[in-house]
Image 1 (tube, rainbow, N blue to C red):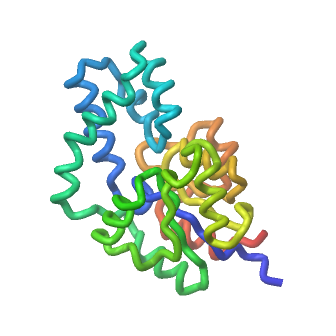
Image 2 (image 1 turned 120 degrees about the horizontal axis):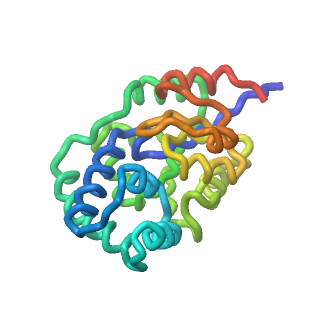
Image 3 (image 1 turned 60 degrees about the horizontal axis):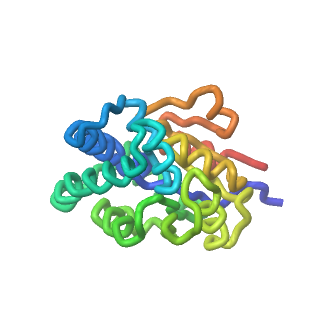
Length: 221
């Protein structure tokens, strides 16, 4: 009996495309220009974080109930014109890894916090869209990362249970979402390494996507 997992779900920003650094840059600029005293670590904590949790975190960090929305809207105003005019940067080895996985019969999906229209635009501009069988946005579920909903829904769309899917993520909130859904989690760290607590939710840490692909192809349940 084939005991291999043949489905892989990928986060997008910071995992497939090297855009998380751009998001972080403009979160920082927005915080500075709006007068919020936030550290780099504070801003990193917003990665892949749903608005319902972002509002709580923003108020905790600033004492202002609307801080998260104020920051996010201003960040989008600053960043979106830049993103519209640039080539979408890829993470190392992404096309090679996706090609290898598909060539070995692994079905691929995207499970992202980004809205579907923007997700499809970024993937197409990056030359990645055609690698994927399904593209799923957390905007389609009731609760977004770090809640498990998007990975539960993505697994359903792929026709498997979450325990029969790998989830590849770069950020803590994404790892928590995938782990809580029951996926087999792989972290390819982007801007931070996992801490001891996060490691309890991670099955494997890979230095790049090709290492992650090799792990998936060699893994047996």
